Length: 160
Image 1 (cartoon, rainbow, N blue to C red):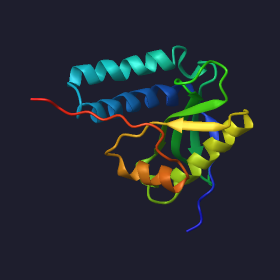
Image 2 (image 1 turned 135 degrees about the vertical axis):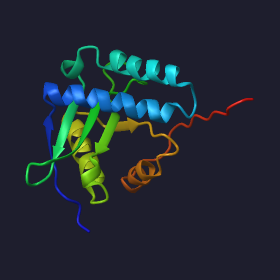
Image 3 (image 1 turned 60 degrees about the horizontal axis):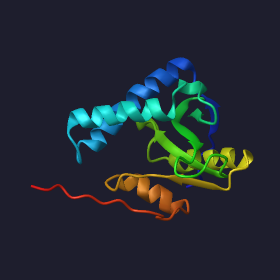
Image 4 (image 1 turned 90 degrees about the horizontal axis):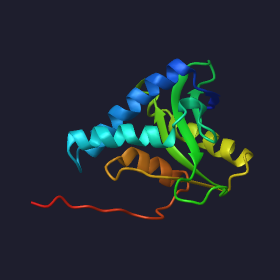
């Protein structure tokens, strides 16, 4: 199957507000496996506040909607500077990428990822890093298929 083509455009303010609500909910659902729900909610809210202090207008962060050939939204992504590298680094960080439920299993994840890579490369970035939750097997498969390799690994164990 050929990868579908997508076009990226910046999120509107309304899309940004909806996106933040969705991201925080998803982060909480992922984190409750390793921490309390209250801690997960605080962590999710803190991450957005830390990395997007000016919302969608935060400098060097790009929040985009991916549209298919007909102009219909099929997903979104958030990319910005790599938080693990010094200011001015040539490394970008993929904070989040999503394919909307109605568009899944049609190659849009690969298409969105490829367009994000092209976007940051045009901005002079030579590396794109990301985190992926170990239980998100679909995302892990997407990243491996797209040439990503494990560079660090965190592990934890619930005690008691």
